[in-house]
Image (tube, rainbow, N blue to C red):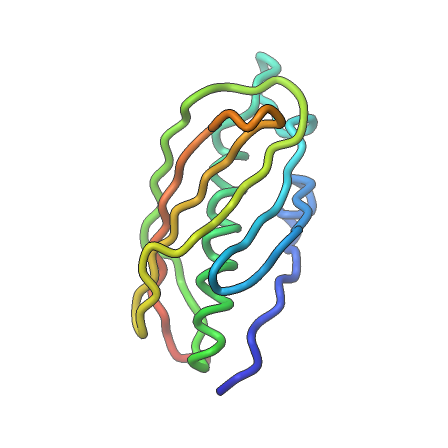
Length: 131
């Protein structure tokens, strides 16, 4: 069995200000500031939230994949925005819905500092042999 993969931030993750708090195949938790991730009207940009959610779900899938000697590739992402935000720090939590040998699905919940749900996302990743 391969050693589980450890999260390393990519360039976009760094630009978004993501900080990883927990990481395992069962749960990835991270934060992202609203500041610097707003659209022209000063509200949280939905694309920033989607990128945040995709990162968390993919990291969770990749940690699982690494235990099988595989890597992952995202094949579907959907996100529902429940409310906006104009300041503060968001917390995202990715949890598995299904951890298979060839496919994973994760739910990602993003909340604000008051614990209110900002969005709910689901990502599906295909597990593939590394090149």
